[in-house]
Amino acid sequence: MHLLVHVLMPGTAVENLARLWQMIQDQYKILGTRDRYGKMKLTMFASGGCARLRGTAALIRGIGPALHAVWLELCKSNLKVYRQVELCLRTGCHLEQILDENREEFALRGRARKLLIGSL
Image (cartoon, rainbow, N blue to C red; front, side, top):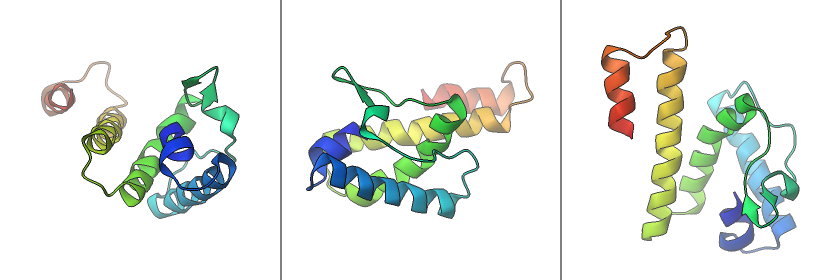
């Protein structure tokens, strides 16, 4: 989000954050995300020069698919760094899906284990 708001989007950080937040909210609705951030401020994902998203694990987990969809919409270039960020977002979403599908398990076995290891 820091890269989008401060570097890639054309407006000011405040304008870009407002646009990004609207896009994330739209994706929340499309994806049916249960755990959603209620608001987004610049200080929530940047502190002391280090980009990091603040919030509960459920909120951070819930924003992954929405942020991935927004990234795909905004960053259509074939630049290597764009592809690398997209891969990280996609892999994170995939790992969360595997863990969610197996949340009752003490340890991952069989197909779930192979999918998790294969994603890394």
